[in-house]
Length: 286
Image 1 (cartoon, rainbow, N blue to C red):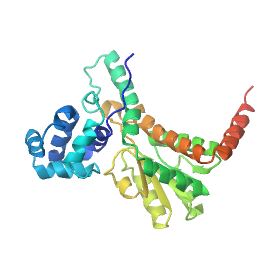
Image 2 (cartoon, helix red, strand yellow):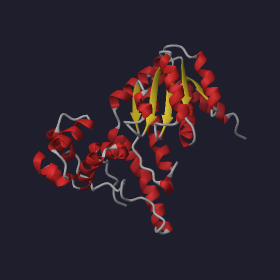
Image 3 (spheres, rainbow, N blue to C red):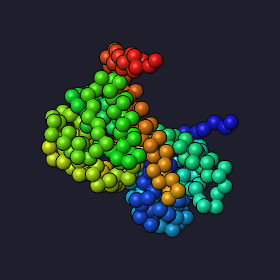
Image 4 (cartoon, one colour):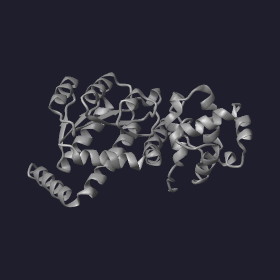
């Protein structure tokens, strides 16, 4: 079986932003994803000509990725030698055989983990961990498949001894905000970053001075704008894969990173609570 290589972080960021890009920006994105090996040998004017856009668009695109300009973009693309991503082209279609569809779905699941790792902001992850360590309570908000990830986060946080508020019902989530204190944290999970209830709750708690940690797939989403700490996933969905496992798996990758960070910050305390929860669950087994 061939090794699964870690995706180039810049390419992962481009895929993450792709659906929110303007037409001219998509031309640049397409070229960078399809021909990263060619870009590194082109001047900015040559790249702009290949993409049929202005040099200004190239520079603006690089800054959208958090880079200083075109030269840094070329350096980042050259850091990792990987095959062009199938994330935008290998979508499940009605013409696929079952074998092809299953292969694409499972490859998307694996790719979601590697791409999420590729764009992971360790500084933001550290800030989220520190905020959780200071909090007395953590309220989790998420619905649908993101609600499944929310329940998983509640499970992991409880294992480290953090007090968690998690309910599948939106009204109960809203009611729970009344017991939060300034140092408490709300974690909002939404693949699209535009779920109405999640946005409403994020705006409400922020207006009361409570920090919001968001786990979402889109940097330009409404939820990202209402986040104090943003943790991005990177997975793709199409009509055949709406609510697919890839999006949950990417969210779980972030949650596992948080759990590992929390456990490492206070290993004695975490080990004690993990053992306590393990013993409690064992006591229920026949």
